[in-house]
Amino acid sequence: MEPGENLNDFVVGSVPTLIYIPDFVTDSEQDQLVNNIYQAPVSKWKSLKNRRLQNWGGVVHEKGLLAQDLPPWLTRTTRRIFEESGLFPSDVNHVLINEYLPNQGIMPHQDGPAYFPVVAIVSLGSPVVMDFTPHSSLRLCTSALRDSVEDNISCGGASDIETDKWLHNHHPFSVLLMPRSLLIFKDMAYSDYLHGIKDSEVQQYDGAVNVLEAMKHHGGNQPLSGSEKAIVLEKTGDSKSLHRTAKRISLTCRMVSKVHKNLFKF
Ligand SMILES: O=C(O)CCC(=O)C(=O)O
Ligand SMILES: [Fe+2]
Image (cartoon, rainbow, N blue to C red):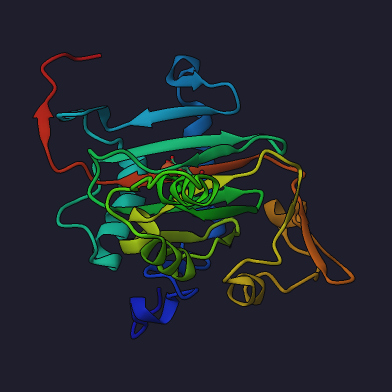
C-alpha cells in the first residue's frame, strides 16, 4: 500500500468483507520467499492428497496454539500484514504455506475455530481463482425443506421465508488471485461462506469480483515479465478463462489468540 492509501480503497465485491491488494509484495520479495520456502528441509513438507504444505508457527489445537516462533524471513511479510491492515489484535503467529500444481486445489472449507476470524493470503506464482460458496448447512437445509413435503423439517429454527431471504443475500462469487497480491477476508465472507480452489488447470474467472483490479496491475493480455510469464489469461467469446501453467504457492497468515508456549524444541 502506498502512503495515503487506505484499506477501504481495496475492498472488492459486495459481500462484507473482502480486501484485495495487488502487488503487496515486490518481485524480489516474491523470489526471496520462494527461495526460503524451498530451502526448508524436505521433512517440513506435509503431503496431502491434492497438494503439499508447510506449517509455520506451531501446532494448532482446539485449545489454541502450541507456539513456535516464525522465522525472520516470514515475519518480514507477516509484520507488514499486521501493521498495514490493522485488522489483527496482535501479530500474525501462524502461517500455512500451500503449494499447488496446476491441477491441484483445495476443497471448499471454512477455517477452523481456533483462528481469529480474519485471514490474509499472500499469493505467489501462478494465478488462480478462489471460489466462495454460501455455507452449505443452510443450503442443504433448503433442499431438505424443498424435498420434504410431508413433515415440517426445522432447520435450526429457520423458516422457508427466512432461508430464502438468507439465500437471496448469499450469492456465490469468486476472486482472481494474481501473484504477489494479498487477499484478506473477514466478517460474512469468513463466517457464512466456504472458500476453495478447483483442481483444474483451466479455471473460469467470469464471476470474479476483482477482475478490473487484478488486470490493471498485470496489463491484461500484455506480455509479462519474469516469473509472471506463466500467466495466460484468455478471453474467448464471453468466457474468460485462466490457464494454470506453473505452480502456485500461497501463504495463509492468521492469528491464534490462545497461545501455549511450546516447551519442546524440535
Ligand atoms: O491457498 C489458498 O489461497 C487458500 C488456502 C486456505 O484456504 C487455507 O489454508 O485455509
Ligand atoms: Fe482456508
